[in-house]
Image (tube, rainbow over all chains, first blue to last red; front, side):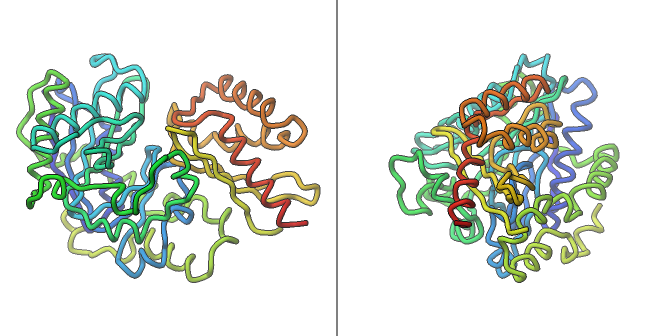
Length: 287
Length: 107
């Protein structure tokens, strides 16, 4: 069985990312062959474990647009989240599914996600190594992974109806990053959304359902009814939130080393957007 | 101590390394920052990476790019750490680019 969790705290991306790691650490239980979480954030940039947020985001734009900045525990690149972006996170037993390394984990999930998109009517959906899913040559979903001795974790962000203009305003893209692209069209055309591909309004949950079913099929598992977070996962998430995700030392780990490259206004903006201080209280009470 | 200077290297078809360095009075790199959108296995490797890269980075000007990256490859292997999406050579090349622009900037 593939255990499906639908649990999100969209106004608190710091807790959302803490819960993300918690689901992986707790892992599949009760005979389930895997756990899949579907969730969303309000406006946020989520940077990779090894990315230095001050080098990746325009902090002044983030502050002006109400975009939070959080660092995740997996590697890979920065992604932009809003309520039009669907996040999927799969944890599976490594031995049970014979996944040897990150490449094969990306391939397993990337192919299943591409098939889900094809099933919804998206043309030219395909997995593109190492960690992207494309539609007609444009990126529609990016993935990241972590592998331990017993467990494989792959999560991804899927642009369903996200505001691409905000994405380009808050992410810094260096010319070097584009150096191996033979054809570089105007920036907003390097990515696409499910809505743009289908030419109609699309609910992220509709895409989530399709991704869940496709992943279950790829794993040869039956998909469970969706459930909420349980106490074990929430306890682990609270601990990770306190120790990592609510802290500037985690989200801005590299700040001291690049401080000289930043204006005082940028440093101030980074401290604001990378900390949960200004997160609405109401949402946090739901925990 | 001046501010950091950064260099980048994108592996064609792969991932990007950003290296930021400060130089000491002898022109050797100090306060190294290795960042990027690549992956490290196992997870503990993320925390070890700068320590592993520090040695090869310091001997970069003496050894040259190729030999320094062979050294880095050996260090990674002996610590059981693998880079995914970039090669050791890319990491050293990003550092070399940072060093080049910092030296260019000082003269």
